[in-house]
Length: 340
Ligand SMILES: [Zn+2]
Image (cartoon, rainbow, N blue to C red):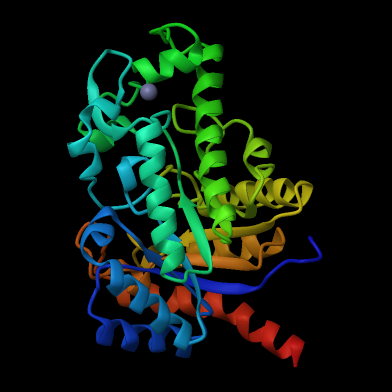
């Protein structure tokens, strides 16, 4: 285990922009033993809640919580149930599928889009967040932009062709796959440099996949990026149709090994959304597996098992929330005892 490992229990929070309600919920998180919160900073927040978000960060700090900020659904190039108006305003900067269709997701090689992401960085750092959390940066998933065929991939736009040196081939060859991955890493390098220049810190959350159209084969390239503080993954087993324990253990190990090699921290997320009472043993097994692999910085998506969001809720949300809170914050409590 890395000698600098952090023990933390964190949770994502979204959907409320009324500070007095947020204050009550942040107090609830702290009382339950959580020590961190991730607030989503969407394009909608950037446009309409600039100052409110700063207030929400301050409220979280008042409760002693470490605050992360995620670019929720930004340009549809990160995770999150939020829409992008940037892509509506800049169709010419969007990704092109292998079959030539332009889709509603910004191209990672677009200079205009990278500039927009830097504007977002400046804002979240002005809001006072402790960590910029680059959540699931990836080329777009076909079904997220209304394309039924999961085998479709991007990007064959003119900007990508320029970087590639010639038109992007229509076949997903190893050379094209390498270019796609290099583009993700280059995109992140530029964003991390901005965060560093503004005095901030960055975490990058990689999807639990090392192959396919969204996986990154080489996590070392990401872990080695200048300005990276924390390498993160979110092995949400149900989404990938995998059994929790082995799947989480496999990615916890890859995460721990990669983070240690590059002397960055390791953080892992487990889901509490979309789970029913039958899933609780698997959830607990996942958390145990992560701890056994040396990951003490554990977070869940999200507050109250997301039962306020139809798309992510289940009828058992209340029970799942109690279970995940108990499992995550136990480590926090024992760490406190260890320090005392
Ligand atoms: Zn492109």
